[in-house]
Image (cartoon, rainbow, N blue to C red; front, side, top):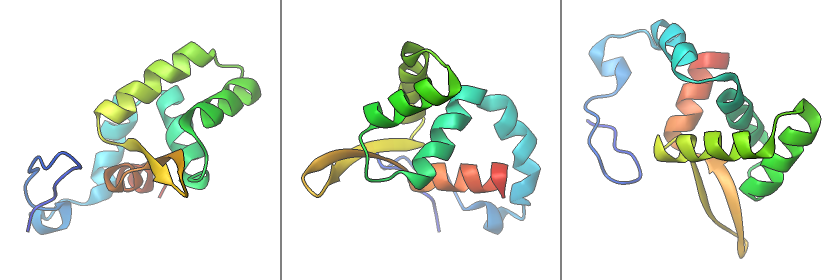
Length: 109
């Protein structure tokens, strides 16, 4: 059994098959993602029917983070396959990918 991202890249067997405790990855993930990226991931975990721009504007206004900084970090998260933008009810909406949910679960779990 293997895990594949949206683009079909094979990442090998799942963590549980390798005998690695997923929580051992938490320090690595926390060093790999910055606070703005974590803000975006956490916000998207609860707002899956909104556009990415509207989510980023809300974070910018409530957390006083420049919108341009959030857009750059969202682009990084998209390139990593942690978030994606798709169609939902005829509207573009941003959501966590499966991998993004796993990463957030390890970090916040």
